[in-house]
Length: 227
Image (cartoon, rainbow, N blue to C red; front, top):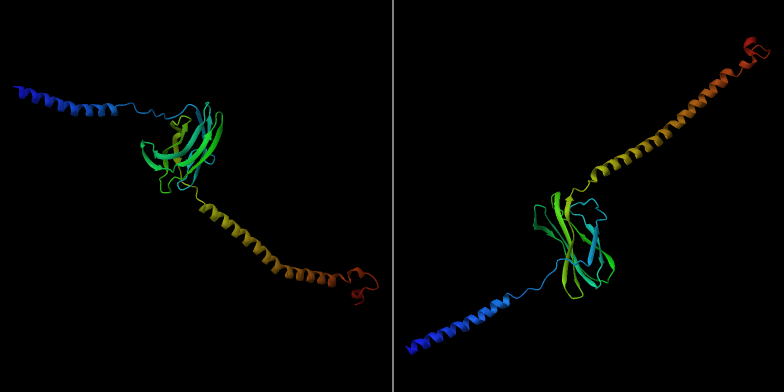
């Protein structure tokens, strides 16, 4: 009987020795996770597409996005970088293009504002149509807390670039016609000028011969009368 009790006590101690570390590990994993804020109220942003104010972009052409940031807080803010993503409007979780992240390493003092330029290019093989685009900036505050502000998230329109073939053909054709007209006018002037002068000279000579004695008619010097 004493042996049975001792065995049960030993078994219970073994179970406790195994359960206590597992319980401690579980408690450790349930410790509060550091809070991560998406955006800071101390940073105010604005944006503009200087060359695409209508949000119409051409596949394969570089797009410039200019955005400004103003620190309205009382502590410095360090801007780490920026990036952008093109996605399907039907499902924002599916990214079509993740554009390169650009490092900034810019410090904004309180009441300070700065503007940065971010450039990206929609893939030239993308089909025309509506797409979603969001751009974000990464930064941290004086306590080294990280933030992310999405300063643009709208639908854009990819459109075909206007073809320059037709305009070039028309321009070349117009130039060719002008050159042909000018050359034809010069050739015509050179070839017709001598014959016109000869005709004028012939008419003047005939007029002189025909009317040379007419003014003597009815006088004693009229040779026709004497005849």
